[in-house]
Length: 275
Image (tube, rainbow, N blue to C red; front, side):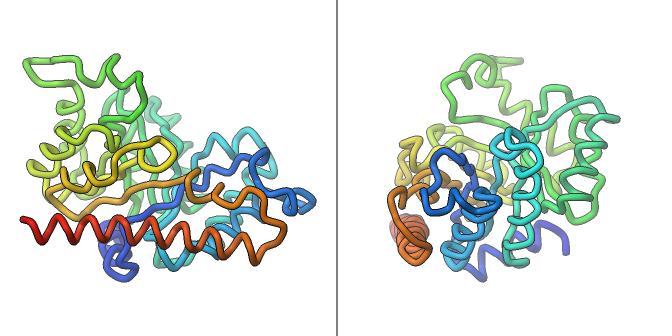
């Protein structure tokens, strides 16, 4: 199934725009899991089981797994296996290199680990994304406008009277508009409004809500289409730091994910009623 179809199906079937980020830091997981053979896998399994009914998919920030080497990659494989097939998966790897190197990344994340999609840094141009775009039924999230404080260093630089991020969007869509979405930080509400107005069929992955303190209401109000997913990581997966068993953990995380999903849907409904 083409990713775009899977993505739209997941949004409809789950009635959720929430992506949970599996940014699993072994130092932050509950103590009762630390005696497991692979605590990272055990933690992820519990998070997925607790939240799978309230999300449209999961995003794994690869840095948390690379630092753990062998058990980190085992945890990636375990998570991909545990995630229900109807939900989307994102390798938040932020890769971007010359084509022959990117081909190896595509083999690793798409062919071997079987992620549905990946985040890509576009600075090196088309060949930094081409091997990912060649994969059937896969998808690329291009970094367009990020939520970190350093975003102002380059992303808003004017080039021919337009900010650089707009050139990135237009150029990346010319590479393959059916396999390309964009990462847009939640704090950039004015730019989100413009992006979703100009490109109503282009999916967006929106970080910056939750622990990063972005305004969910302002973000929702800025959107002109519903092809978006909002990532929340730490505010959900670390919402039960002191629990003593799996049942307590599951109940707290399930409620956290449900509340995040419901808040997004409430604000979206409120916005639609006003428009």
